[in-house]
Length: 338
Image 1 (cartoon, rainbow, N blue to C red):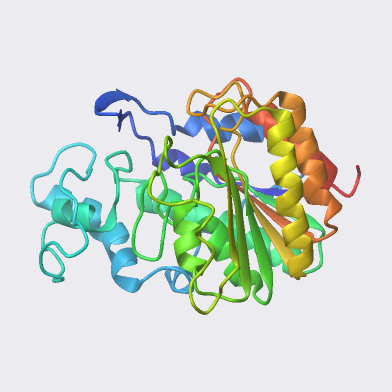
Image 2 (cartoon, helix red, strand yellow):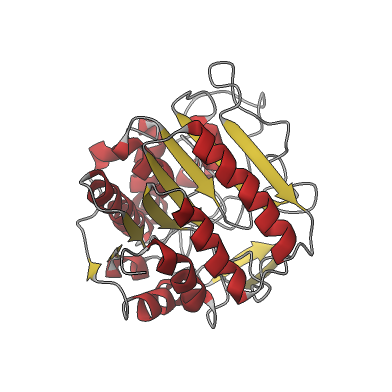
């Protein structure tokens, strides 16, 4: 299995973020990807693809949003801004005019749904590099290889067609799925619901989105991910949400995963995209599940049991001491050598 990675992820290096109203040291840091690469490169060959071309992103994201991501930092600095550009005023549905704001700080509130997804000097560069990894993995699988892993940072599953949030700017999993094309299944195993991926494919009858995640009544992103969210008018049943309560352990999680795998198998996709987060681990500071390290091996086995050409895209995971091992555990059953 080839591992696609890019050193350009280090260009995006937030120092702090806002969690429950408090400014704390950032969790989504370059060391995450470094730890993963150090672990998985021992078993899998690596490659650095070119960054995604702007035109390749239009299959998923709206042009005005992409322009915002590309120009926000320069506009912010030109206007006298200093430091990271973050949103502090948000556009609610039905509030205000639809006209594009002139200032970068105003656009942040239009195109971002939280205060923890800043734009820095290197954010656009890093996001393009992450998207390039996802597209290269998709091309590899579409070309006949059984599986490929995209070590994407920043992550992507909270990014929608015209919004970012949750550390996400471009939706890497959605780009991979769209690149492969045809009838596709996306299995989201991050601790948090992939609200961006759900929004992108909400009314797409060719893409099945199945997500295991924390109960949105108690966990970010709060407003999506309930069982009764099953797809738009043109794709009824193509979205499946399996929320689990805090404290869920291996048995409960794997039972839900078995149901998810059954749904994917019944869908009959040509390929599978997995949004992999290790923040469901009992060791992760951002999650409240109780999954053991061994559970990630079982998760990989379930994914492999489908026998599908598979792209694994990295999402969350914030415990630097375990993230590399957990990703390696998941990937091992998908490797042709195992």
